[in-house]
Image: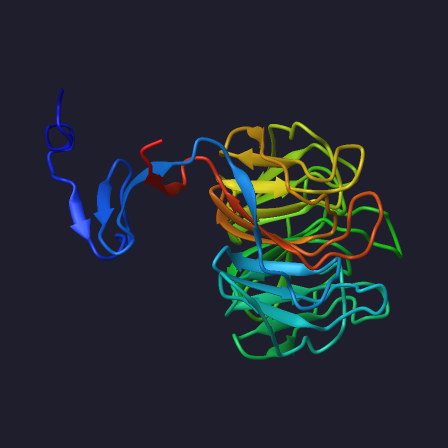
Length: 328
């Protein structure tokens, strides 16, 4: 029988603490806990439970990644909120409020450099606010008001806003606007007007627009100049949430006609349905770096019930996973 050293070329290490960045297939013995451990990769995506937000709400916005996110605005039945909460990977902490209470906003950026734009009628509907990691500051307005626009962007200096509802005009919009750190400029429209869609993307030159009323299972990809229609989702829906990049992302939750817990994974070409949320939700906040790591928070149960403050963490297929070996 071959030994571990003959197979891997190294011996099993004895260490007092687990390696900080183990690679798949690595095995070690932890002398502190007296257990044998190894690094594997997940074979399918799944959600797990995390600590709750301080304030339950829906129609809130979210930016960031699974270990560093920001949640802001939203409705708590009533009122509309200006609350902002910061996530450090374990807990939510309330930080400085938005300048104006609003919900159903577009959002882009990180938990230290973010942009919030638009909001419902009567609550600074075209306003843009910039987050510098400590405070929100109102900056130049968008050109056209839209509720629930999609958003993408790396930080508060470069963002993209697309689609959304226009109560004073068409029910749905195809408008796209680009933020350069100072002003919004209208650029080429979506192929299909839509509202209540998911927006994914970490830069304003590469974004994904998914679902929404008008095209509930459709996907469009932005290349910095134009939108192109790509493969449809498996389950069409509105009021869904997305996270990740235009080549590696997830969408989750949403409203009928599909179940409100469905999660789909995008690999740059097609959508695959994987593990559902533990809690059905629509109008939730979301954050995530790609399709292996995400965050879902708040929202409203897809059928009925009180607003949510719970948090769920997504671990996608291929993500690293430390396992403990037993003799059973």
